[in-house]
Length: 91
Image (tube, rainbow, N blue to C red):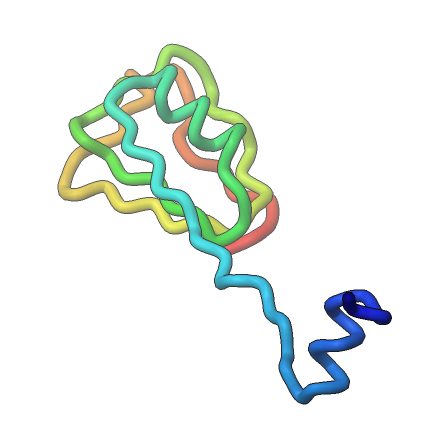
């Protein structure tokens, strides 16, 4: 039976316990609702990929995260009424 907890025992034996790498999420979007959901639920380092062109139904949420947005040659239209992407902070 072990007399010490596993982490202390592992360190004493020269092992290092590390968490696995974090994986960024990719949100595939095909509609105004999909895009809003992706912006609201994405975390720093995630990406949003357009699957087709999107016409907005209102202004999008303000971006305050480090995101990659891949349009794949699709368009984002505000239909002459709404602004597209507004980045307040992040990259």
